[in-house]
Length: 121
Image (cartoon, rainbow, N blue to C red; front, top):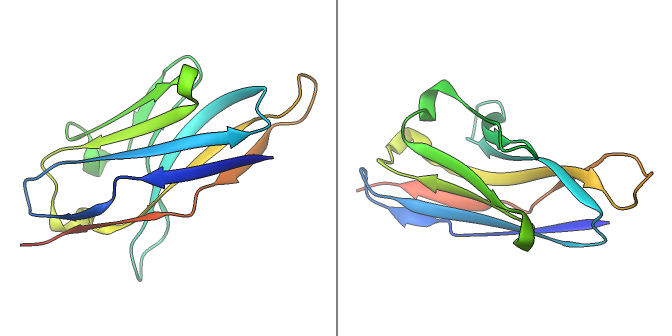
């Protein structure tokens, strides 16, 4: 099983920056797509950004040009660099990773516990 631990959330002023990290541990054979989601109270869970094993990236329109997702395969870690933060970026950010624990095993998805990001003056 894969465990995910996120860090880097906090309180920041509008226009500021934060860098989120999500480290995977446990029994890992391969990690495929790694993603960041956010949950805002009263709204649907939103896919913020994702990165494939080949480093192909996708972003929500609302964060394009401001957020950058990256991964360090040696550390089994995915990052989300968030710049020019806005109040509407406030929410709980969770990472989601799918991967295999064995060479011929199935792809299994895992969620992190979430980290709060608050953008406020």
